[in-house]
Amino acid sequence: MNANSRRGDKNWDVYTEEEVVGGCKCGKGKVIDCYTVASHEKVPRVERDFDERIIRCNNPLCPSKS
Image 1 (cartoon, rainbow, N blue to C red):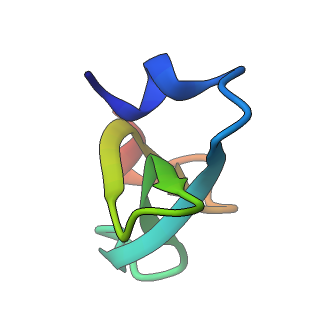
Image 2: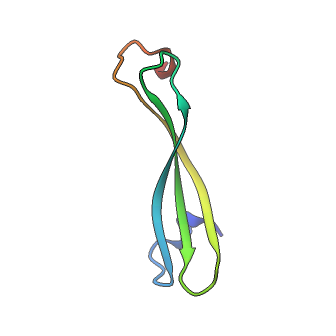
């Protein structure tokens, strides 16, 4: 099973986590990986699924966005 399938299960805490993995190509923004994380409240177990990669840059002509 994966972390997304744990949504709605009362024994699991499911949340979204963002991790900065670097800068964009123009140098004005960040590249962020988004993960869904599910952790069990009684057993030391954590499941993690990659959701998407987001580029947060204010430059409309950033080469990373294309």
